[in-house]
Length: 377
Image: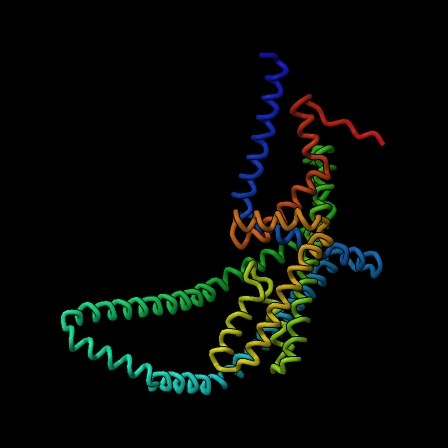
């Protein structure tokens, strides 16, 4: 075989092994260093603010980083505290109305049991027992098995819930430690940001550094664009739900609208995770007008989202609506509900790498062993 072909095969193997090594490094090293990655991203995010404080206010860089991180932590704690306080208030209101709801369910159950249809069924069942004593053991066994299954399922649900609470409480010290490590990493990285950038640049060849810079800048734009798109969709959901609940005369419409907007962050389920149980409850409770109104509101939300989401996501991230929709569907099929996020993000990464001519350079390296020549203007 020609030596040129062998060289191409060898370079192709080098590219393949390099890609596999990079993927394996990301998979196995990320769990070990993710607090420092988050700290680096946080330091990158606050760097413009620190630069402004350093240049305009003559604040030392270490002090600017400390002040910015302190303001960030205080803001996050304020937001979380406000949300938790509001949720607790709503839970207190809900608990006050729970007694009347239990009484209503008890009355409904007694009314159903006392109905002629149920009484007639009970009489027929008793007559069947008396006329067919051989079936009593079988029926009793089936009823006992069903009751045991329901009891076991209920017990598992309660145990899982309690285990989840215990795991959450036990993970608080670990979460606090990780948060502290992230903040310290962000402080030390942000304090000497440009020195760290120069050190990293010394270890990376010039050509790779330029390509990496282009890819990184495009990925940041796409990431912030994706977050912007999600914020726009959540805001639209909040506005539509709040207006609809105000029209329906629902109490705490603004609070419920905000909570449902946050629930919209759930992949695939979205608003349905809150609206569908609510609609079912209103119909069971007998409030048909509210149930019909919530159903119409849910339909409006679905229509608005289906019309706007691909367009908003495409305009914010820089992708066409059709490829974005295809990426979401393929991601859903491959990775489940998380694929609705993984698909568009993967498409963004591939598009960014393509715009940085990485695929072209790899092709030219495999074919000729050199970087592709620049395109003529």
